[in-house]
Length: 322
Length: 287
Image 1: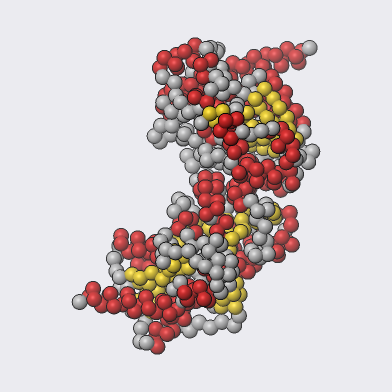
Image 2 (image 1 turned 180 degrees about the vertical axis):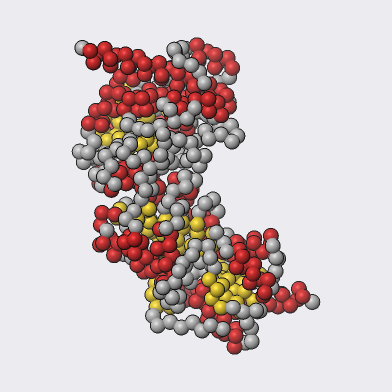
């Protein structure tokens, strides 16, 4: 089992900020738009280096999505920045008609996704965004797991033609993926190989899955941990290959149980290899104010809940085999 | 004197085109028994002026439109007039107009890029989005050092959408002065007169208060449309976006369709089609 350590902790949104300025250096067509959240989205370095390529739209997200769509006409690659809630639910129709249906090369970059936004509470803690974005034909949906992966993803999506939803978050978490990683859209990352259960995690839940894997190893359970950073298009091959080996699955995500990564995996399994599966996700409810740690524990999104789900799914696998 | 004669002849030619476009509109809508004839007929003169006189555009369509003037239709439901004008100005064969709203057509009920119809750069239909898109295209032109202009058209009922006012605030603040927007002020929307449904009040005062350079024109007088659009062009690159309030009659050119919201989204039957075509004689050929 590969051991993951870390020397520093950072927020994924800072990975976005670092990736954005790097993407801007590599391609002069990269432009950025923000709806009055420059500091929260860590767009300061981009604005400092490329002031003429930044558009401040004010608190007007619908207008921002339309402007971004229009800016692609003539070859710009717009990156929009606001909270995940205002990047999706608030502007769903603008994204649907002006970006997705119109096949515009817009990168919708969304911070403060999920419960880990913390104290601001449920108005801002969107847990439905992956589902909404996933349902749009042609939309690529990415939810990286740490600073380095978010930075690499931000750079990678500038080179991908087509609309992308890039989701990241507010809290400071361990940086455990390599700084020099190659980010391939749609390609799963094998975190740890195992034989008893497949834990398929995205976003902030990947670190929780790694912690759970270490504890499970001490309990004699060999967990295969796969990071799906690209929820759409899904790396079906990697998932099916793992499941063929382990025979059961736990999905883990900071999202509503309905419509997220787990549902994508379940749909894949139903069509191919139906095996016992458990979800680690928010159980169709809104969040509340609290610290990120408190909320992840209360709503069942920490390593302990992953371990419980593994135990449940392995018991189901055993029953099914009898 | 010479040039005045030429101008007169050109106007006469354009009026022939406008009559042909109106014939296309009623025939297209009749052909699929759906679609929106009222606003299409009302805006015909505007479209003919834009595509046959005012805009610098290339029917060998390219999405990026570098060096060209661009047009965005925000009230996408008046697609029949746009499709007819695009076909008749050379973007695609006029015979394709007969596929309007039918299965496997590029001429969808509302315009889209999805079927790759030449001339269309954004999907529209869900109202209120086109002004933002046009502003984005105008910003890119500026970044690229492209002196082409961006034109838009909106319905007056569409101004009830909040996104319009987000865009209205943005454009003057950011000196988007390569943009010429037009509102079709026909005073009608699906549920009745705009004054009854949700009154728009003093539109000139509203747009001026937001910082736009406001012009007005009679949208059913081709000469006036050309004059005001040219005046608008002369006002570009002077620090302010331009808004034209265009008075039109919904259904203009067909007497029984004129001035009533009832023909917003209703197709004529066979007898009504004949009655309409009899009023729209011209020297060109139907598709």
